Length: 201
Image (tube, rainbow, N blue to C red; front, side, top):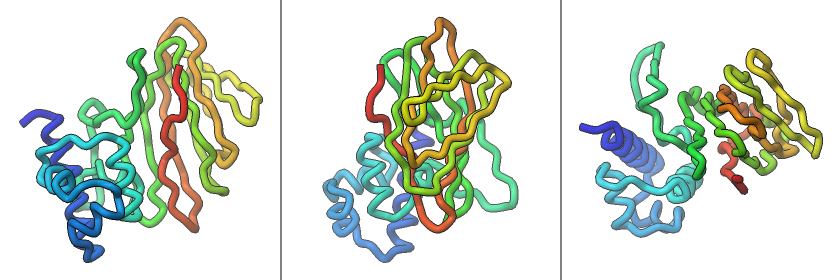
C-alpha cells in the first residue's frame, strides 16, 4: 500500500467515524458539505483522494478542524508521526508546502505544522477568530512575517508570536529555502480551522 493510499484510507475512516458519531446519513453530510453522495462514498472508502477544498467543506460540515481528518486515530498516551509520511495541506507551484503534522485532542485542536517556503514564495493567511495565536520557530533560512502591514524578519534559531485575528503573511524573499515549524492555537472557547491560502507568488 502506498503512502497516498494510507492517507486516503485514514481520511476516509475518520470521516465515516465522525459522521456516524453525529448520526448523519451520507446524504445529509453530502448536502451540508456541498458534494455528492457518490463522491462522499468514494472518499469514505479510501478510493478517492479528495481536494483540499472538499475536505475543508466536509470538516466544516462535521464541525471539526481540517487537521482532524488527516490524523490516524491511534489509542494510547503517545502518538508519533513521521513528517515525510504526512500529506501536504498546502503547496504552490514553486514547490513550497505545509504539512499538518499533529493535532491535539478536541475541543481546542491545536495544530503543529511544518513549512518549507522556496525563494520567492509567500502565504497569506486571512484573519482567524479573535483570540487565535500562532507560534513560529525558524529552523533554516530567513522568514519574513508581516502583520498589519509591519514586516519582521526571523532568522534560523528565532521564534515569533502572531496574534492571528489580524491576518498575516509568511514570505521568503531570499535566495535560499526557508523551513520553520508553526503552532496554530485557536481560542480556548471555540474552534478555528487553519486558514487556507488566499494568494501565493
